Image 1: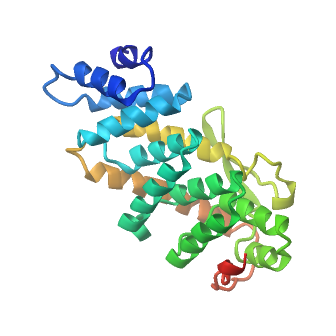
Image 2: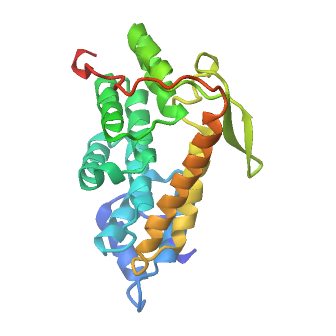
Image 3: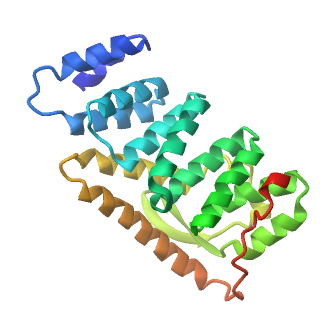
Length: 263
């Protein structure tokens, strides 16, 4: 791919990369959004986080590719490149602009970032925002928050969390590219890499979103909303399935983090 050849051998100096990218599109009548998105997917597969950051910021500076998928990829790349301040700045901007419209995967990513770095207070703050906005956490989020509660000796809060968000009996996994229902592991059975540092399902969903958004253009803003709606429909399907597993009594709607400052 020509755009990759244009930047792969360059240093990570911003001016060099931006200059090469500007030269690449100099004779284009329209911004080659699809080509740039494909290049970003390849760079992500190769874990070229700094190049992803540079190409994404360059693309956004041209007023192109402003989708939630693009911002999520940028957030992930910033975190992987250990640029936590920039990741937090981007998260704060997106959260303040969208609030209730913030996709759950962004909360998941921020909680994962703070979980890996033992930044417990900030993890609790993000989780409290989720509960306040009525965003239902998935099993990965519940696992990470629960493990932190246990690590800090907050057994009462852990029990309250599990009571409000009981672990499902079944969950969806991708096996050889097919989405199948499998028996879920309980919270105390999960290994350190499951539901904590990463989730196979979340990783695959992220890649699927990145690849599907290669086809989006700024002249088709409604398609961004359609993509988010499809993700929500999948979550609703999953929640409907999980809701029939155990037939448990309804739990209290009170937040699990009623005293975050004490954590």
